[in-house]
Image (cartoon, rainbow, N blue to C red; front, top):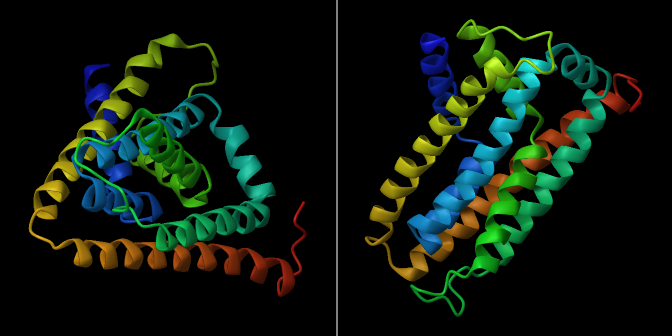
Length: 217
């Protein structure tokens, strides 16, 4: 069990490491608002990874069937959501009326929920989790109430949280080396990247429906 717990900790780190929409969002928050904002955003991603880990352990067969049966719909809906969030990222001014001590609980919750929505709308994220569990040799459980696997799920969360804490800490350190105008352009550029990712997902889904004649449901 100890070996599996250590493997799960590595899964949490590896699942968080790829540069995708979530990582770009965390980079934007860390550079524009600091370590705390970036880490809170990362914890939203951590919650999504934990949810996907629970699915991978307890409901792998059901989840795989759902993904296979609804791949096109997931790509279209997820791509649209990611693209819209990217548009909001480019249009918002994260420095407007922003002070060092003005990161309120409402803003925290907004950043946290934005990360959750982006994580859930990214169809590739759950596939990464599935692949990592298979790579590290942690099999799915056929028992939906096998609570002996709880430490593995917790370890995945701790691995993801440790990664985001270190990652956002490094970003916030470099934040001090940029001018506000430079950070604003970086913020907008990261938003554009997210839009491109969303459009790519949406385009793949539409291509499969229109040109491969695959029904949405």
